[in-house]
Length: 435
Ligand code: ADP
Image (cartoon, rainbow, N blue to C red; front, side, top):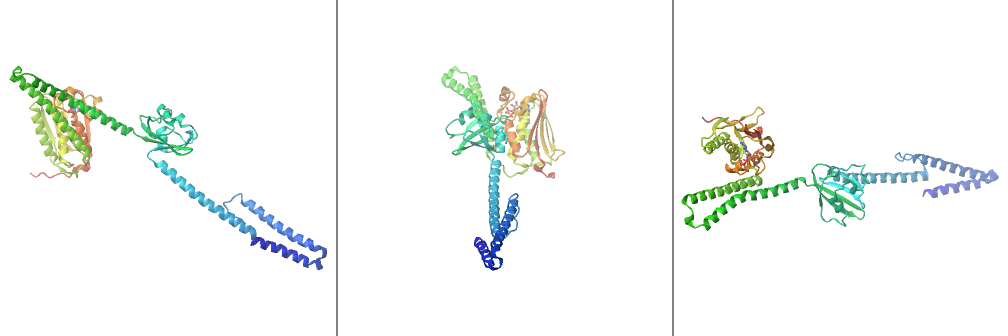
C-alpha cells in the first residue's frame, strides 16, 4: 500500500535523524524537519500541477509518482468511463429523436399543464408550431380550436378528436392525447384529409347511384301500377304498346347504369393483367363501325389510322375506352356534324388516339369535373341519348391502368377533342403489315 510506503519513508527518515544525533547533536531535529519540509514541498508542487490539469480534464493527467500517480490514474479512468457512457446515452437519445422525427404522424411531448417540451417535423406542419420559440408555451394557447380545447380539458382521452389544421390549408387532423407517465403527455396528430375525402366521395357515390336508379324505378313502377289497376279495356292497343316501350326504356337505362357500375368496380378491384400486344387499328375500326351504326347516317366520319401501330395492354379495356369516346362524339354532335378519328405516333414517341367532333362543345369550367362519376354538363341531354354519366369515369380509369393520359380540349359550341396518350413504353415495335 502506497500510504504505508510513505509512512515508512517518514519513519526511516526519523530513524536516520535519531541515529545521526551523535554527529549532528541538536541539529538532528532540523535534519528531520528539513526532510519533512522537502516532502511537503513535493506534495504541494504535485497538487498545483493537478489543479492546473483540472482546467482541461480532456488532457491526460501530468506525470507524477507515488500516491499522486495512483490517484490521478483512477480519476482519469473514471472520467473516461463517464465520457464513454455519456456518449452512449447521447447516441441513444439521438436515435430516439431521429425515430420520432421519422414518424409519419405528428408528435408533441407536453408536461401536465400542456406546456410544449418537444415536437417533430410533422407536428410543426400540422399545428404550425415553431421550436425553440414555442418550447414552454401552452399548447392550448397555440391550438385554440374549441373542439380541441374541450377535448384536452377532459380527464382522460380514450378516443381521438377531429380538428382543422391550425397550420393552414384545408387539412383535417385526427388528434389523440396520451398520458405516458404521471407528469408527461404526448399529442399524436394524423392527416386524415384524404380519408375524409374518400369517405365523402363514397357517401356521394351511394347517394348518386340511389338517385340515378330511383327515377327509372319510379317511372317503371308507376306504369306497372297503371297496367295492374286499369281494366284491360280502358287502354287501347297503341297505349299499351307505348307504355310497354317506355317501361322497356327505363329497364334498359337501369341495366346500362348497373353494367357501367360493375365495369367500374371490376376496374377498381381487379389487378392489372399482364400487358399483351393489342391490335389497335382493328379495335378502332370495330368501334368506328359501331359508331356509324349508332349515328345512322346523321354524321360524317373520317379517320387517319396508323395501321402498323399497336400498344401493350388489355384488349377489352382499351376497346371499351376507345368506343366510349366515339359514342360520346356521336351523342353530343348534332346531325350533319363531322367526327374524325386519328391514331398515330407523336414526335416524343408516345401513341395518341384522338376523337374530334364538331358538336356542342363543353364550357371550360366543366372540363376538370367531366371524369367524375355521374357528372354531366346537361343531365337531360345525357339521359335522352342513353348516357349513364359513367363513360368518361370508366375511360379515365382504363387510361390510368395503362399509364395513359386522358386529355380533353373543348370550346362551347365549337366541338371537342378527346385524346388518349399512351407512353412510349407501351408502344409495340411497329407491326409489319401482313398484306
Ligand atoms: P354520359 O353517359 O352522360 O355521356 P360521360 O361520362 O361519357 O357520361 O360524359 C360525361 C359528360 O361529358 C356528358 O354528360 C357530357 O355532358 C360531356 N361530354 C362527353 N363527351 C362529350 C362530347 N364529345 N361533346 C360534348 N360533351 C361531351
